[in-house]
Image 1 (cartoon, helix red, strand yellow):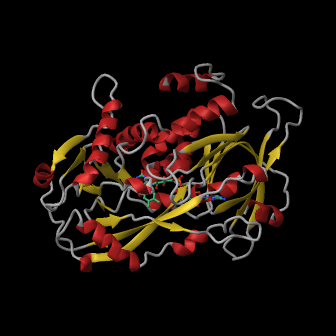
Image 2 (cartoon, rainbow, N blue to C red):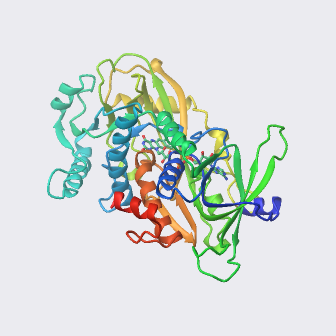
Length: 447
Ligand SMILES: Cc1cc2nc3c(=O)[nH]c(=O)nc-3n(C[C@H](O)[C@H](O)[C@H](O)COP(=O)(O)OP(=O)(O)OC[C@H]3O[C@@H](n4cnc5c(N)ncnc54)[C@H](O)[C@@H]3O)c2cc1C
């Protein structure tokens, strides 16, 4: 894709300059932009998004669950950012009237063989304790205790975990709130319907080091659709720093700045959802998850019950690996997944069987194919799940890849991390050394 684009779009000298250019207005790109706009009110921040609206890809094709941080290694970024992001997200929802509900969640074992894994998750949450309560509180319940809380759950459930900190959120209201605060700010600008097609390194004109006012940075070329169905309008801007938050397209963006030997590959795992209307769920109050299969290496958390804020029940997402067709250059075909979003009827039967293991009275006729989302994976089918990847592969170029679940929950915390990277590694300010009055003020506020 990178090669293809470079052939198609020749170099175009920049005709403007921006301090921070974020590629992608999903939940993560928006959270980063909002954070940078607040932290650096005297520097310009652009968010460039290829769709006509924000959050049209993975950020609106997920379970909308505020995860509590249960499943990942204690020292992982996923655990740290999920816990921090969860707390920030609940706080924001309360303060800004964004739709959410702290439903709580059950993870249930449908046979004794699953109990040790759930016990392991419980122990792990205990090890997160620093003095007081665990930041990921869990309670072990017997099958009877679970049925007392959720009478629709079947007798085959032998026990499980109750997670009181799990909830649901309106991802659209959340993203709208961030978009508004960026557009309302002096320093931020949303550039919608505009695709980044080429990135070139800009060398320092005076041989100076980064952040000293020399013209180093990245020349980012974009194409804006003009509605005529043609090629669109090309533009080029000098960005002092670039933040790649392009989700399923992150590898194609990153590979623009990397040599052949360092090119990144992503893998894609589709998750399909089924809406449900029928018997067997009348009393459900909480989200209900199965015990994840250990041999699935956490490629998904298992087909679970989730609900919308208006109490519509959904089951999903399952895990279906997709194989991208390859281009002549041996790269995967860009955006191939767009033609794979329909939910196939064939997966329905599999979903019904999975759900019946813990909600035995559901009826197959109540399931309807709904929507799907695609997970951007850093490891292929069968590979061990890996952590979020937040990197600085080249000076002034921050790149986020593999931001799968719990990325929505973690988005505000990812933004904090990226602000720290921008502050230290792009502007060389270092925490607490604030070089301008406004930034020093901000630093104290967050210390
Ligand atoms: C099935 C499924 C269920 C999930 N459930 C949950 C959940 O319940 N809770 C949770 O916390 N997380 C969940 N997640 C994860 C969560 O949805 C993602 O981690 C999060 O939405 C990622 O946001 P993002 O901004 O990184 O990516 P995206 O939302 O994909 O945004 C990337 C943006 O970049 C834009 N873009 C790409 N290329 C370019 C370019 N060249 N130029 C300009 N713009 C470009 C795209 O148009 C897109 O808008 C789930 C994910 C899936 C797939």
